[in-house]
Length: 423
Ligand code: PGA
Ligand code: ZN
Image 1 (cartoon, rainbow, N blue to C red):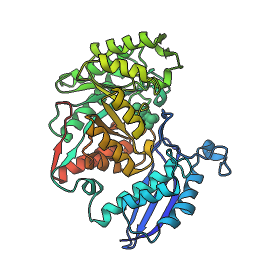
Image 2 (image 1 turned 120 degrees about the vertical axis):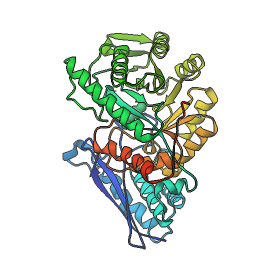
Image 3 (image 1 turned 180 degrees about the vertical axis):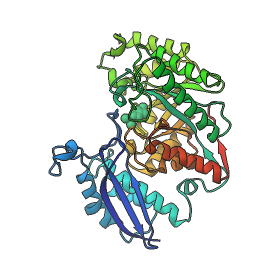
Image 4 (image 1 turned 135 degrees about the vertical axis):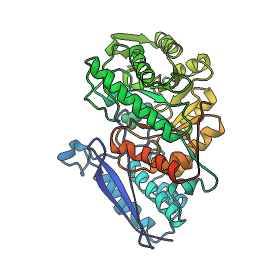
């Protein structure tokens, strides 16, 4: 089957900011569309999304965040190269690399390349009469990932109500994804209720659908979530554990980690002690970005001293980038990687990062961004790639629930296995 048309256009993400969509039409008349997500606490080493700020495309509306240049790159540079070619994800990605050999996709824009690469993966799966998940995982049960779900939000997603970005829960004792999600919704609703009773702000919903509640310490925020878990009748540790996304780059000034809502500023060694006591005092099974994106030394030190079972997850540190992952493997800086397709810019290269991580015994967590769309391809990728874990935000907002609902659909309609990397 061949590519008939490739069209790029601008749409809005869940924050109301412009993002890139690409539609690939095939010779059988079918159309395959994908929309690209976008981060707010973006890592410095991510592939480069093109925004129109300062360019000839800049519009007065959208505050310079429009993506007309990336869209023009799809329509004027990518489309002519792909039309009349066979539809095949790997061929499309190879053509995109030929057009823009830069490592960070800065010439075409990673938002342009990823939109086309995602649409190409959907179209390729269709050409083989498969779902995207089944295209990557044709045989045996589909491997549904363990969800890691946002209950409380702070940092760049919630006007810095807390210094750290997220307190999440992982339903490690759930037997099915359906059960896991029902537990999480109950915990989130209980947390909202407790927040109201305490007179804390609960009407403010953060970018990823979590509750934006102020706390004077990270411990207090953890204890609040623990109480919510217990009040719904679940046991902490054996059924539901905590995970943190610290997003520490956001409060590191190059010398000190400044936890301003706690009124604390720590130098590197004080901060390392602080993180060590946090993970030993709270029921935390996974900690993401506890140190800044280029503070490799702290990552390595912590990794050599932390509890053996803790998942140390690199997001801004690794940015779904093969070179940075290889450094982390060599230096033992982490034992898990967040996989965000738009940090990388191509679907096939994102999969290669995931495979390299798995080959080196890293856990893999496929992740959405804080700016998302109604698309559900992320759930197909996490499942088809047998990633083991998925992180989408909370259970509020259809851009989040589109992914959860896709996983519920798999469990209801397919032969599936619910993965638990924490067993
Ligand atoms: P972002 O946040 O999409 O704003 O980068 C998500 C995360 O840090 O995991
Ligand atoms: Zn993160």
